[in-house]
Amino acid sequence: MIHVTSHDALLVIDLQNDFLPGGALAVPDGDAVIPVINHLTLLPFGQQAASQDWHPHFHVSFASTHGRKATPDHWPDHCVAGTHGAELAATLHQGRIGMVIRKGRDPDVDSYSAFMDNDRATRTGLDSWLKGLGISRVFITGLALDYCVRFTAIDAKALGFETIVVEDACRAVGPGPQATWQILAQHGIERAHATDLAGL
Image 1 (cartoon, one colour):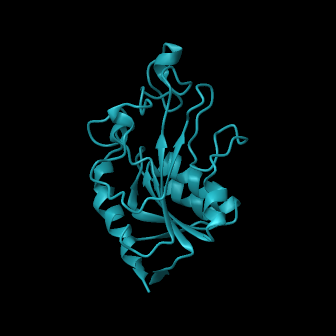
Image 2 (cartoon, rainbow, N blue to C red):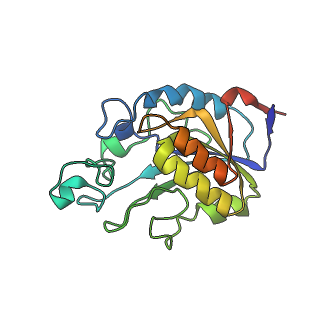
Image 3 (cartoon, rainbow, N blue to C red):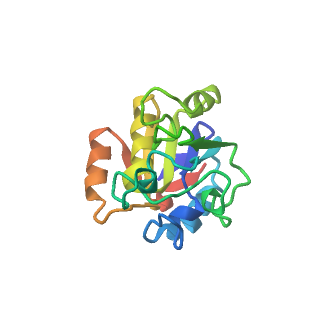
């Protein structure tokens, strides 16, 4: 059993309408994580934060910007700032979320991690916010495991946080997420199930 304390933070990554069934870039079974995450929000985390892709029109990651069809490197238009698709899932319990990170706002740089853009130079402020509040361990949930969750977890570990990915509170875009779990393990990132977590 893992006991959640005030030095822990829950991170909810990109739980947005465009990544849910019916969305522009739907993650298979993505809505199944919502009740799991809602259960976790009731635990005594010191802080809870969420991230959103918040792209301008003609973002560099959009296939349409380059006149191409969607590929793993160029996605369908998704999570355009201010649209319904960019909103957090309406059924997500957001009452205890203390910070929302909006990333991917630079039209020329993508941003998978909730901590920094893919240029590895521009930080979102999440790191300093968490450390300033005494957070030393983060539990990461959300979408998608093989992209934004993975990059967020690797950055969290590199920035000095003990990092645990909650397995049943994530879903992947691609089939067979085992390769992602192996990468995370190589970085010293742990995994757990929601039922492994409890309050003191």
